[in-house]
Image 1 (cartoon, rainbow, N blue to C red):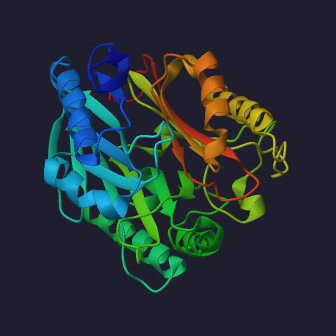
Image 2: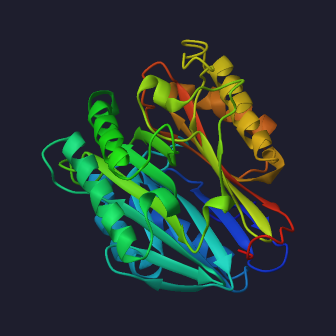
Length: 375
């Protein structure tokens, strides 16, 4: 961790030869600053850290804002990420009392460029990594917006020689007023996925579906996504952890609990948003934030172990809390168990009101696999 004048940066490093990977969580440390001052402090801390990572370039950034309607335009005026890397901006207030936080994913030795339709390409060796973020539309309701977002994304992937089923590894779906609008999102995703050969007999996509607001109140749903061109189905594996979790299709939704991808020199693991649930799809420990936190840790650890990984390999954590009053308790638990992991705590209701806390994470592990090209 780097402590600066008005900000701090938590850093994960994967430097094992070939492409180096870095995950940064940048936090403002003085919540009394104006929003403009907080943006300046955050960007200065990011730039200072970037200067210490030779050859690293950002390939994806997500800004967490406290009030998107009043903050997005200022942020965009002060940054240029829209033309240089995949960009996501979402209202999920940081729970440390500040107005902005940043997760940034950086790589070395890659070629990057902006493509059409909101895609950002990261190329190295045999692979083209396709990031996209902050995709919205103005359809009449959450169902129609989700349907249009997924159909457009699928068509855009085809233009890049990819398909939703074969190449998309991860999605994030942010839903305004999730208690009311999530049902429409689920219906649209289920129906679009069937047309794309994504079923409980084939596979789904690792995903987080979570509460979030956009600057424009007419945008009810936002889609961020990550796909890889050049990957084969033999490289992709899906995580189930049946001792702890059930298939999501058993309660009517369509995403994978997790996915791992094997490259010649490393394994990437994507853990979907995970809460306190058992293998019958039931919420565990109603109204007990401590026990729910421990159960989600156990669920995530089981998924990681299925990918022959552990918390030691985790690169970053995003922790979502429904009730801001739970922040002090949950942060203390995380700080005790994961003091050195880059993480951010944000206010974002989970798709079921009974889930008080949810976490997603990514992991990377070095390996020597002669079957596939290196990352």
